[in-house]
Image 1 (cartoon, rainbow, N blue to C red):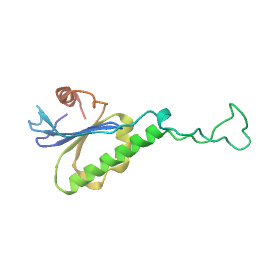
Image 2: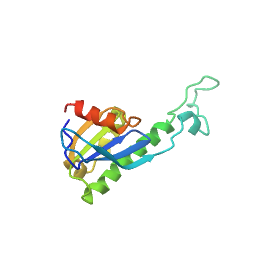
Image 3: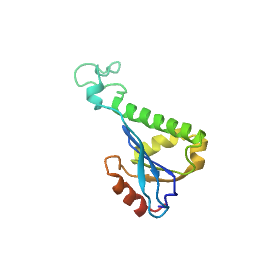
Image 4: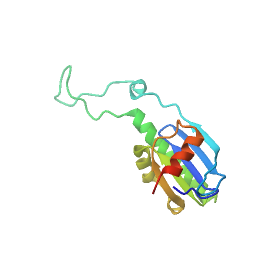
Length: 148
C-alpha cells in the first residue's frame, strides 16, 4: 500500500490507539509516533456488578436471561467512536490530508459507522489487521506488503 508522505497512519483496536506520521516517501514509509493512547478495559466478567435478570416466566436456576450486555465490547465500541471523533477534529483543523487506518475488522467496522465526511475525503486506505502490539517497523512492513 502506498503511504503518502506526511500522511497520518492510525493503528487502533478497541483499547489502544497510535497516531503515526509518515516521514518517509510513499513506497518506503518511515513512521514516527505522534500520539499513543491506551485505555484500561477489563474483561466483561470483571465489569459486571450484577447478573442479568430472568425473562418473565423463565423461572429458576438455569432459566434463560434477557439481553445481557457485553460491557467489554460496549467500551471497545465507545473507544472506536472516540477515535473517530479525534480524527474528525484533526481533519477539520487541517492536521492531515492523507489518512490510513489499520484496525481489526470489528474495530474497523465500528470506526466506519462514525467517520465524518472530512475524514472520509482524506481516507486513502484501510488495513483490517490488529497491529497495535507490533513495533513500528513491523507496521511499516505490513503497510508495504498490503494491497488495496
